[in-house]
Image (cartoon, rainbow, N blue to C red):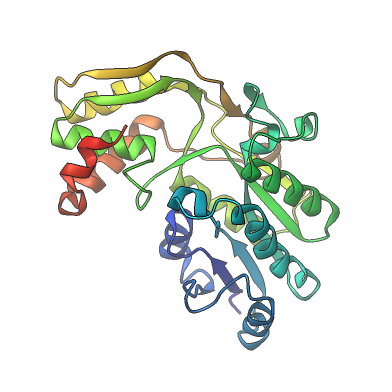
Length: 294
């Protein structure tokens, strides 16, 4: 019998990829936000019971700051969405959600951190990092809540206006300069490589409650721009808009590798795949908006 999985955020970047790639392997329920408001505690309870949900994959994020509306609502809303699900964990097999490298405090360089580094600093830079930090504390104390902690992720369906690798691909297709706000060392995971780890957690009894999910292979943003330029076959200018180097943001996936093993898509291969994705849907890229992005 297939697991009956409630996937939140199924229209977002990560959620949409999960829905497209794992539907069929599991029975996935993924209502839109207007069909089910995760801030409505009673509605969430009713939905889980009516659909006999066995597991939850929580990828929804409440982000009014990004929409330029009410950023003060972000912290309480993200906490409520999570706990409206977590309070039902005793009736579920597992809850899997996606944490963030921001749990380690982005006020400082995050250099190849491991899960054991969690808690050395409390991330007070912004509400996002603090909420993910507090949620991970809850996961560690739980019986069946698991955090797949992400750093950088790229792939189809992300917002090409703001997401670095997709933005570069779209600019290259149109022959625009490849812009980098500031040089930085990052760790970028192809979204396709997220699928098997999700299945691993769903189909086993994990030894831990939080796992870094990243490549463990840091890369400079200029290296990524050079890869995009090479794939495009065009003589494109690479522009760094601000001097100096931003704080590093990288992790190590050794805990997950030791327990399950990891197969990673090479950066060149993953970016080439994404570049061709945008070539095939170039009509959905607004050139005038693209020119204004940085």
